[in-house]
Length: 247
Image (tube, rainbow, N blue to C red; front, top):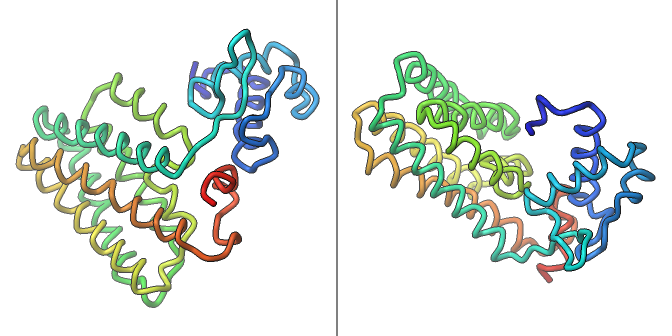
């Protein structure tokens, strides 16, 4: 089931359960019952049951022996592994796009996206707000999947990126480009975008795969910046569920 094809109450239950976990309203290790969702989200038992199954598949819940679910516990190492897995899958997408050919419309769209990203990155000093970068970066990664033309790979990546810390913008979106460190990360990341499009256009599958895998490490750099912050307030709301396991 995708969110687009699900029933409204089920969709609301899935989104609501994710939010409860991510924002720390359900603590790591806490048991989650159908009745909990019925009471907190104002849904019936069938959507609550569907939400528990879906969010368990995404990895935010763990099944309990004998039945039921508990909120999953994530370590710092888990987060880094999730990013590495995403990089490996996107590397495969880049290789397939290069080997199969992404098609002229997708290739042109990738070039346009990279050109727009150039403008954003070139303007970071004057405008450190990363809203446009996040939007265009999402667009670029979606075009990469379009170019691979593999429904199975798209499904695997979408499931992996359902975890809040695995998506390409998971850490970009909580920063501002108002430090030389962040600006340097984004400049390198943007050069990788351009190199990736070039490798795909030239049908260099191995090169494209390597660039995409390395590109995922940009998220690692943002991640370290967040985790090494001295203040608890530095952790954004979307990562509060990690906090007890990082200290």
